[in-house]
Length: 343
Image (cartoon, rainbow, N blue to C red; front, side, top):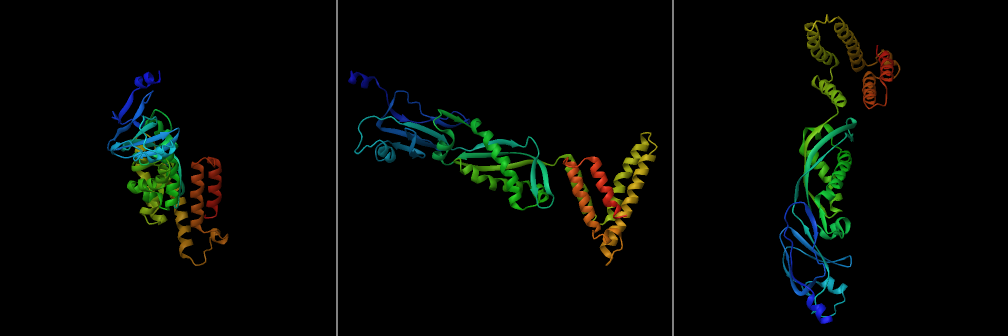
C-alpha cells in the first residue's frame, strides 16, 4: 500500500513563476499534495526572488538564475529539516516568488489640506497631488512583515498603506528640512525630494524601496492664498507702505469703474476706497515715523509697542480668523483696538 501511495504522488521537477501582469507582488507556488524532487530545478527570472519557507520560518532565498536544489544549495532548509546527509527523497516546503519590478505611476494626493509647519509663515495648509513608484528589495522582510502566508499578495493590498505613509511623512519632512514653504512651492522637484528623503526609512522597514516620487500640483486654500498674495504685493514694493497703498489703489480702481459701468453710482465703493486710503495714509505715516524717528512720540511708541509689531499682530489675528479660531466680530474688535494705538 505504501508503494502504491508513493507511485500516485506527483513530484515537482521544475519550479518557476510566469508573471502575467503588474498586479501581483507575491505568489505562492501551488503544491497541493505534490513534493519537490531531489535535484529539481528552480528557475528565478530577472526581477524575481524566490523564498523557501519551512513551517513558517524563512529558510533559503534565491535571486535570478537557474538553481539545482540540493543540500548544498539549500543549507538553511537542510539545517531546519535536520538532514545530516545528502537527502535522496522528495520533500515538502512552501515556495514563494516575489516580483521586484518597479510599480510605476502609483497615484497619491491629499483628500483634505495637510497642515505643514513653516519657518516663515508658522503653519500653512496645502493640497498636493502626484505619483510615486516602488519595488521589493528585501523579500524576507516583505514576507515576514507584509505578505505572510497568503497565496497571492497584490499592489492593491498595499497601496493604501503606502499613500498613508507618504502623507504622514510629508508634514514632518517639510518641517524637518527647515526650507521655507515658498521656496519649496517654487521648486516642486525640491518638494518631492524632501518628501522622498523622509519617506525612505518607512519603505525600507517594509522591504521596499521608493524608486521615484513626483509632485505634480501644489496649492493653498483660497483664504491662505489671498494672504500670501498680499504679502507678495508688499514684497513687490519693498515693504514701503505708501507704495503699497498705491498698489492697492491701482487694484481697486478697475473694480470701481466696473461697478459704475454696471449701473452702480459707485458712491459706496468710492467711500470705501477713500476710507481705506485715509487709513492707509495714517498707517503709512505712523509706520514711517516709527522707522525714522529716534524717539517716536506716537501713542504706540509711548506704550512700548512698535507699529510694525502691531501690523504683524493684526496679520496673525487675521490668520487665526481664517482658521476659525477667532470670529469675524472678535477679529474686528481686536483690530480696531490695535489700530487706535497707531492713530
